[in-house]
Length: 393
Image (cartoon, rainbow, N blue to C red):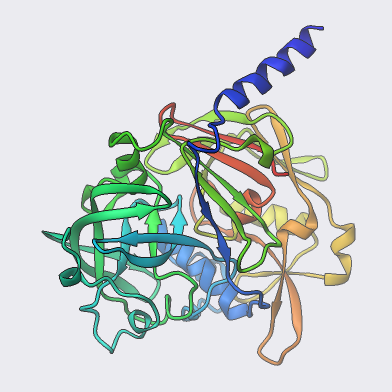
């Protein structure tokens, strides 16, 4: 009876955090049009991950050849959604990224030499009556160089919300091919101000400060097998209990820079391969990044064959026989099936291979990307400095 009362109480708490339809701001997520990623694209995603966390090329440090692949111009599994900037509104499709904190878009001042700028909508400051120059410069490092430009302030519209005086970056230099063929023009960082370039206040924090949302909570529901039109949704202002099938398990943040918490353990075939590590939830990557020791152990237990470039090959014919991998968080076990962590990619000759989504993080923490978030509805509670997970419906 006590167990039943506890379950009812937990569900009541979950529903208490769920706002009415009129109060939720739903942002539809669009998934990059279906294609089989190439191995170069797979490596490109990893190099972007390393750059984001200011790490050296972890693949190169572990490979026998030590060579790094150049960033390709298309990334796999990109979830993006719409915003508008300025008066009148200038529309942009954006990557909503919990692993960074800055908002930036290409500027109309970006020259033709920067191919990425020419492939997306560009912000025209002179066309916006609400534009306010900031005067400061910004630079954000990515794999092929620093994206750089100037900061400004303007109104930013997200759904029916209008955020006033939002500081954002106008990218004037976008070197290399990193953002050429992405389905997003820029990035909306959803992490905390302490890691933002020039300590600019992130968009969601301004939503909270300006009283635009009833709860300082946002949540992600990502469809791993969605379409370009139906890749899931991002909700600002609360959670949607119809999108998950069990109570949310909340854990406190340990560092209010990233969405970072302490994970209890990681288990594979009855073996505990990691204990007490920190983990960061990052919607800006599709991968699962592990510290060096755990990276070697988990891929070995999966029967992976290491390559000179730092990947682990898995037999595509063995997918059905591979084990479930469990992440123990807040006393609950969150499992990933082989279909979640095995990525089928194309070689240059048109043949395909299967790769492990467990990539190397030359650091002492884990990164849980869209491979994990696609299985588990994730609530980001900025007010109470906590993060919650539940099986996605």
